[in-house]
Image (cartoon, rainbow, N blue to C red):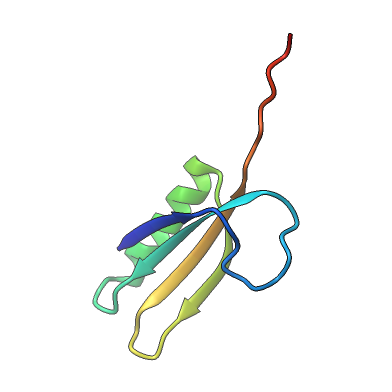
Amino acid sequence: MKERILSSSPASGALKGPYEYLVLSVNPGESLAEARQRVREHAEYGRWELERSRLYMGGGRMYWLRRRVMVVERTP
């Protein structure tokens, strides 16, 4: 399983807020249960939410997870 973080939307629509995206690529030979477990762990511990999932003809899968970027301002 391969992971990468993006700073812009994978969809071609307008952004509804500042999000960062995590893209999980799953090879056709890897188990579906393992992929689901990885997505579940990211959602539970990293506060990611599943935005899109895609199943490709060869059996590969790709999951896009997103979370809002929180900008913290320093108080005087």
